[in-house]
Image: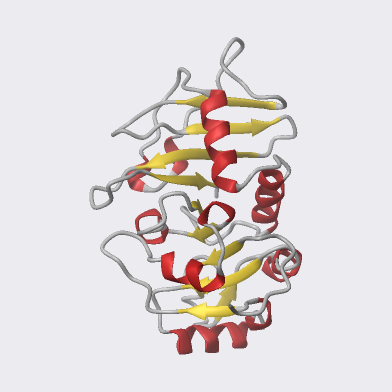
Length: 238
């Protein structure tokens, strides 16, 4: 088993292009996700950080070294492809970690969901632009951790506790929370310190969680025609 200093028995898988790094078309230089230095420094104290990309591992390593981010990652897994999503099972077996304690962070839902781990929660960012501040990811992870359960159990509990409510629908097949409903009004189901709204489309049941301080995200069961089970996905706005 590879060495890790993580104090939490989980892995954060990071996609590369469009998630951690982006190419500036005007300068042809690599840009990093805003705030990622500080965010990765915080997250790697509690988690093992791995890069999971469809690019070649050698190319990914070079780009991360040029961006000054390589030192945050315990390893890089390249050329990860499947008919739907990415194969994570073999990596989890290598690290002896349960999928429920892991998150896969990416920017394209159909490519970054787990192909072979139905209880590994995916976090989708940068749906509209490469503009999300990485501190938002830290905030999400810490709020999920504070629930005292693994990520999958927390996802299930939030969705089950809030339940469906009135409002517009979210097309998760498009991979964007742009059509998510506004939070439900008085009398709608809610969780402590949260407001939520949910709807359904093509078998998905999106749930918007909004905390009293304005922090929000959308949870949805993403159905892919090539996978026998829906995948738990969290969409961060931006």
